[in-house]
Length: 117
Image (cartoon, rainbow, N blue to C red; front, side, top):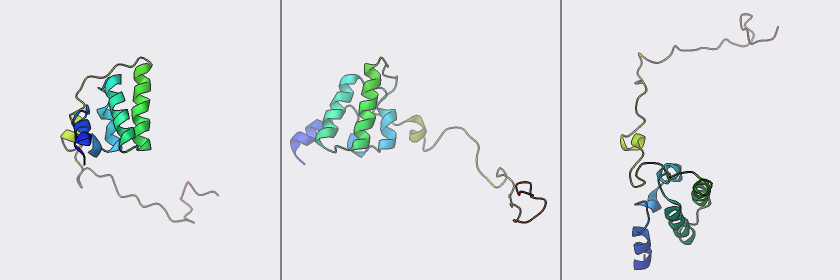
């Protein structure tokens, strides 16, 4: 890896950008300005040139050009649900909270309402 590539990577608005999965990219770029997105687009085109990543970046840039505002937050940080190791809230899953066992009726059973008569 050249020193130039390392310097370019250090100048990116998202740390560890190269290791960020595409699924997390949309959330992380919401707080970036159009200029910062342009920096990421240029870097991506010169290095990975991954089509799904380019599409996500370009779509957000288009949103900003159409009047969207960067959201509050920090592109360097993880999404709250990722930082905590999972989604917040919800109910705990246990044998006591699972639903009843469902055994569908066999075909040919006359009490099966889904079966035509």
